Amino acid sequence: MTGAVIEAVDVAKALGTGVAQVHALKGVSLALKGGELVLLMGPSGSGKTTLLSVLGCILTPTSGMVRVHGRSIEGASPETLAKTRRDHVGFIFQSYHLFPTLNATDNVRLALDVRENPVEGAVAKAREALASVGLSHKVRAYPRELSSGQQQRVAIARAIVADATAILADEPTAALDSENGRAIMTILADIARDHRRGVLVVTHDRRLLPFASRIVHIEDGRIVGEEAGGGGGE
Amino acid sequence: MPLVLKLAFRNLFHDKLRFIATLIGIVFSIVLVTVQMGLYAGFGSMVTTMIDHASADLWVMPEATKCFEDPSLLDDRKRFRVRAIAGVAETLPLVTAFADWRMPSGSSTPIFVIGSDLKSESLLPWNVTDGSVDALSTPRAVAVDRSYLDRLGISGLNATAEIRRQKVKVVALTSGIRSFTTTPYVFMGLDHARAHTGTAANESTFILVRLAPDADLETVRSQILANVDDVEVLTPTEFAGRSRSFWLFGTGAGAALFAGALLGIIVGTVIVAQTLYSSTKEHLIEFATLRAMGSSSRYIHKVIICQALISAVIGFAVAALVDFGVVRLTEGGALPIVITPGLTLILFLLTVVMCVGSALAAIVQVTRIDPAVVFSR
Image 1 (cartoon, helix red, strand yellow):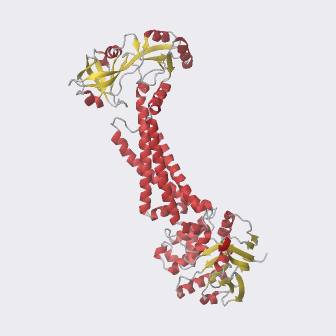
Image 2 (spheres, chains in turn orange, blue; image 1 turned 180 degrees about the vertical axis):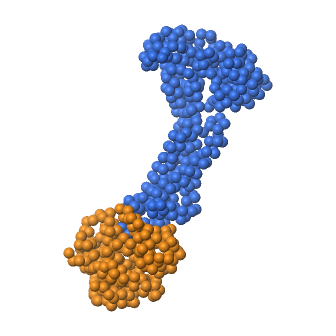
Image 3 (spheres, chains in turn green, cyan; image 1 turned 45 degrees about the vertical axis):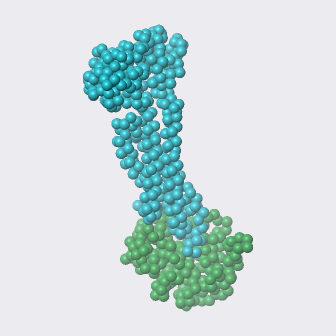
């Protein structure tokens, strides 16, 4: 056991086949621990999102190993991977991916509803999650009635409501202005610090550096550097 | 409301125009199937109406009789042989035959004569609205259905006409005794029927057998078959089944009705499948998001099947209203559409099966979804 929430060990990932095949990851190792906010930075095409997908059990590595809470996911079926995701991982996407036909509460509640066993008091939990990201006054609002920053907060509430131990965010501030971007990062940093969750944020944005406990640089499918960040954390 | 159901509802109602198109497809399909099946039920009921209203335990008829409207003759010696068999309480002759009805105006129309022993009440007209059945015992008395008054060229009770150049008088009017062949039924006493159809006094078309209270039907049947040549012996249910089979399948009418119903099912399935498929395609990124969030395939399938079930229930409800109107419209017609509770249940189940079956294409599509697409959009 390493104490990591999610850990990639010497992971390689090839995408596509034949002449179109791309080696997106070439022997990457990275551990995300509870209580830390890690920034994963690198240029476009460096493999950031592929690594996020592999760590989030959406993609399976071509070689190497991914462990979630110390358990390898090697050979797991798509349904087992889905269960791992719903039990341990919360995702935040650049374009939010909220359900336009559901209000904020129901969007958050979905993360509880997809669980096999119904969660008691799901509505109350969803509203609590919304309150924790400062949206207690928008519980009935539909995505179209929310600003971009508010929509991303709903997405964060959805990621944390089921008590996922790892929050994986793909460019969560890319579509936001700097004020909203800071607000979102503050929330994510609080989630890491106060709830002892591991938060991994893929970004290009150097303005986020002050929020990170650790910054990992990736280029051409390889980790090329790591440094301590200016943010809190472990 | 469960969130799965809410999501399914919202996905459907999100594009109202498409949902209306789906409903129209389902309604068209179900109404078409209902009309065909209702016609089938109505037709099936009409072809056996005389058998259903006759009072007999067994029907004895010449061999190879196809249906009630297929008259061949049996002579009375056979009837006496049947009467002599142990367990037979009564043998009641019934005369049926096609004849010409000459109207007061001089023109004529074909009719189907039914003559029975009035005292034994083996097959008397029912639903009498004017006049009386008792009056049929008077000379030249007949009963007709009021829906055929125009066809028979008469005004009503006490009107006169001619059958085989012999005068007849309408002494009773019935309601709802319609013939699917559109040839009016004309009821009269047994002897009058023989006289009006040229049937000899010792002949009849059918022998209706009533059993003694303690008689065993199968034993009596086998005894009749053993003792009387060239006859068949059927229970009312068997005879009704044979008549129905002849008219529905022997003539191709039933096949045409079933073909229409099948067409309705195919049209409905294709329309619903197309709608669910395009709806799923439009919401693919949402299903991918659900998958990324860790939803099982089953959860996503539930959303799609709920969409199919909602379409089925709403579509069926609208179709039922249309069907109700169609039934009312055809109630007094030559061939009414009959929708029984059983048929309604079958149609509802058919709608559900059709809609859920239509969801298969959408389910196959969503099963292949790659949750990684959430990062590329």
